[in-house]
Length: 229
Image 1 (cartoon, rainbow, N blue to C red):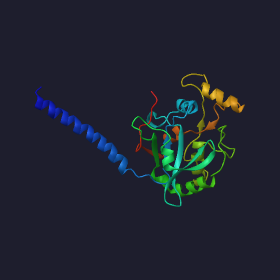
Image 2: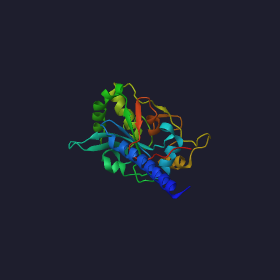
Image 3: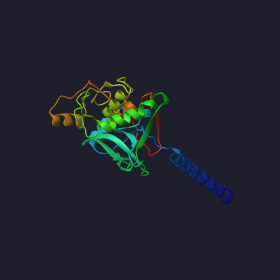
Image 4: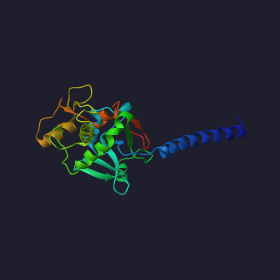
């Protein structure tokens, strides 16, 4: 191949790569977050987050270990209402997005947007979320103890908004290695420290389960989420 053909080929490849990057950038710029959107996060914060991702499967195999709901504060700025280890809190959006990044240093966060029939529930659900601010974190993953883990908070606020009819469904929880009968070490250590039995098979909910709900449309406007093999 002569030098002119090589030059044309390199220019074509450069335009193609540039176009792909531009399309990805345009997608991010065209996406507009809305109050009531659910923010699914792929956290890299230790063995427990890894254990959550290992025993659950998210939308299209995505690994999600946390979820919160987008809202606007009195100044019109986006925040995330979420249940974290210190309880139900309101977190600035940028602080939420800055917790974990992909290889391109983009936030490992996907967005779940309620489909049209469910959007009427959002104002009430956000009011319910704000009313739960300050409630303790549910470290034992019980569904009826007035404490909340991240996905339980989302389940509960939409349950209340929908007159006790669930939008997202509870499922039996598992803490076992996939395709085995062996509980993951991280979960054994976690519940041992709490000095309670592992609640295997009890009803609960997780971020990955919510992400697969037919009530949502999933978007990826931020970074790349890791996926199960």
